[in-house]
Every structure is written in structure tokens, then in C-alpha cells.
Length: 497
Ligand SMILES: Cc1cc2nc3c(=O)[nH]c(=O)nc-3n(C[C@H](O)[C@H](O)[C@H](O)COP(=O)(O)OP(=O)(O)OC[C@H]3O[C@@H](n4cnc5c(N)ncnc54)[C@H](O)[C@@H]3O)c2cc1C
Image (tube, rainbow, N blue to C red):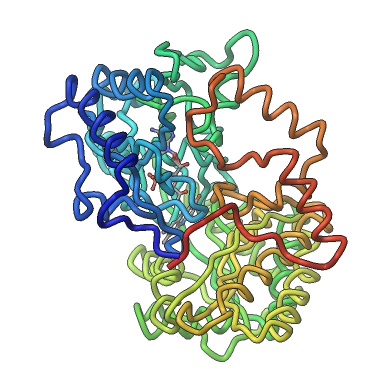
């Protein structure tokens, strides 16, 4: 179904005109978009299989304008979807046909840096990488580093509780944010968290982090900064099978080593990457591990030696250690470019984001290979192995009838497997619309009822990003019945391209 509306039916057009006019009373005309062409860039996020045209897109430039948009939404009962950079991979920023798209792109200023307290106050539209670039002259950086860091916004990172290569040692977004200021749909301005080590009462900052735009709109983020380590080196180890590499990950962590990053790529991924960025990977290996050590020169030398020893004992067929900063960056360049590289060898790919206990890595990788054969779809593995955060990339062609459906069934079976082995259906990309069915498997009805209660406390009329992340209990009952019969429940009324 193509949901783009060239000529909105009369009722929709009238509603669009009314909402746009009301918002236009507080925002300049150029910041209120209604034309089809102007709305096109907002149709989807990084999960481009699903698209929708919003009723109106708005680009407020400050908090007063953002609050005005929310006031119109409240007064007219119009849903609102917040959007940072639109790099999300679970459809969190997918617009609603009858909703306002609220872009935070103009909130792009670094407001202040306190080097002594190692804190920076930034607006939500500032990109992740820009924070580190901004504070680099002070010898500081912001640790969480999603591979999309050049583009994704800190507001999006907070909403998804994003991770990255260095989160194994330094924690996810939730561990690296001190305070968030947010606007509720009711018009209140909330300060969540504090610049002190702890804050009394419920931890509303943690609650807001990972809430996918369902509770409030983030308008300011205070991030924690770290001093740049003196040095860093990468160990690149080759393995004869993904299972051996998975086992080596468990051994490294089991030995008490916490690398700054511990990533895995299988052969399909390294081959795609090598043609794209020439990172110097071993193309004969079935899988490689990239393990980073950072700290003082002595700490790094010792940790690199220990990691190499453990990996050799776990069956590594070759080990290389970066001998210069340029080589370290070259090794990482391949990992960071892996998604676009895979995009070059397949018309479409679907990125899954399950999280499992590290001890189950070998088992789950074997089962993934079996599913790949069962569904007749190639699958490249590129992931945060140290965190047990899988990113199987299923390669498919949306133009071949039935391939997207088979891809979805493959993804659903894999996510159910993650739950079965004691893991979760997302490690960092969020639930959005993509994994909403699997929330029914992950949580019991009583737990989902608490999710709904939290949502209602912040957003009683359910206007912020409705239909995302938290499934209705009715939907879960349907999903349960379908699974018993062995069927699959399609995503909720999602228009596909
Ligand atoms: C190539 C590629 C690599 C990636 N690698 C990683 C990775 O390594 N680690 C990782 O964690 N993710 C990764 N991602 C996913 C994505 O980049 C992250 O989820 C990122 O945090 C999304 O930020 P964004 O600004 O693009 O948010 P958007 O996609 O615009 O929005 C994401 C969600 O946040 C909400 N939101 C956005 N801004 C606000 C706000 N100000 N207030 C309230 N809600 C808001 C939206 O409603 C939506 O639900 C990758 C994506 C791509 C395309």
C-alpha cells in the first residue's frame, strides 16, 4: 500500500489546514511543512521498509516554539512524533498519517562546557560526534559512540538509550547522561536527573532514557565527558568459525578482561567491507574479532598481551595488533562502515538487534546460520560481541514478492530465540514499530500494564508517539493466539514500499 497522499481527501486536507494554521500562529511559515515534496524527507527513519507521510512537519527553533507545537497537539488531539536525525533502525520516528512530525534539527547548539566537572550542556539536535569534536581541545570526549555517530542526534541517543563500540567499558547512554530537560505534552518543563552523583526519589532520568519519544520531548541534555585515554591499540584475531569466535568472546570476558570494545564480523561482512574501505581484514577467516584496549601505555601493553593469549588459547588462527594510530583507525574503519558496505552487496538489508548472555553467543550464531538456510536468505553478522548485542543483517530484495515477509519471519524467529536463551529483543536500536510484537513475548501482561500506567502518568491522552514500543494487551492476545497456530502477526497497519 502506498500511503503517500498526492491529494489528501477533503477531511484530511481540512484537518491539515487547521493544525498548520494553529501552529503557524507561533512558528514562521517556513517551519511548518504541508506540501508533499516538503514532507517527503520525513517519511521514514533508517528502517526504510515502512513509510508514512505526516499530516504536518514542524521545525521549531527554540523551546517556546516546541511548546507551542505541543499545545496545538493537545488542543486538537493530534498525535506527535519527535524526530532527531532519523537514523533510528526500529521505526521510532516513523510519522503518523494523522500526526505532527516534530523535528529537533534546529536545536543544534552546544550550550556550555564545564571542563572541571567534565559536563557539557547541549541541545538535542547536536550530533553525537560533534560533542566529542567540540570538547577535543580540552582533552575530553563523550564515550558512547554509535556507528551512526556522524549523523545521529544526542536527543535520539537518549530516546533509544544508544550504545556503540566503546559502551562495553564505558556504559550506554543512560550511564553517560547526567540530566535531561524535557517538555511534556501537558506543557510542563521537567528537569530529570542532576549534575550531582545521585538524585533523590524515583530515577526519572533512567525512565526517560530509552522511552522512544513516548513520555516527553527532550530539549536539553547534560552529558558526562571523559578524559581521552593516553593511548589505544586494537587486537584483530581470525577464527575458523563464528562459533569459535563467539567462544573466544566468552573466554575474554570470563578472564576478567573488559576491553574498550569487542566486536565481531563474519566472512560475508568482512568481504563486503574490504571491497568498500580496504580495512586490511583477513578474508580467509570465517570470523574476526576486533578488541580494543585503552589506557596508559603500560596498561595497554599488558591487556593486549593477555587478550592475545586468551584468544590464541580459544583457537585464533592469526592475531594482528595495530602498530600505529593510523592502523588502529583503519581496523575500525571497516567495522564502522559495515552497514553501508553490506548495503552495496544487496538491494536491501534488515538489521536485527537482539541482546543475549555472552555465554550463548556460539549457540545463537549456529542457530542463526540454520535459520539463514531455512529462509533462503543470506545473513551477515557484524556486532557488539562483548555486550552480547547481535546485529544480524538479513540480505533481501524488497522487489522480489514475499522476500520482505520471509525476512520479517526470520527476524521474528531470531528475536524469540534471544528471549529463549535469556536475552532481550533489543540491545540499543529500540523497539519502535519493528519489534512491537516481540514485546508481547518479552513481558508478561502485568508488566506491560505497568508500562501503560507509566505512559498514562506522563501523557494521559496518549498523544506522544502512539502505537510505538508498548503493544496493547489486546494485540498481545492476538499475537499469542497466532503463535500457537504457528502463524505470524503483521506489523500494525504499516504502509510498505
Ligand atoms: C548505519 C547505522 C549505524 C547505527 N549504529 C548504531 C550503533 O552502533 N548503536 C546504536 O545504538 N544505534 C545505532 N544506529 C541507530 C540510530 O543511529 C540510533 O538509534 C540513534 O540514537 C538515533 O538517533 P536519531 O537522532 O537519528 O533519532 P531518530 O531516528 O530521529 O529518532 C529515534 C527515536 O527517538 C525519538 N526522539 C528523537 N529525538 C527526540 C527528542 N528530542 N525527544 C524525544 N524523543 C526523541 C524519536 O521519536 C524516535 O522514537 C545506527 C543507525 C544506522 C543507520
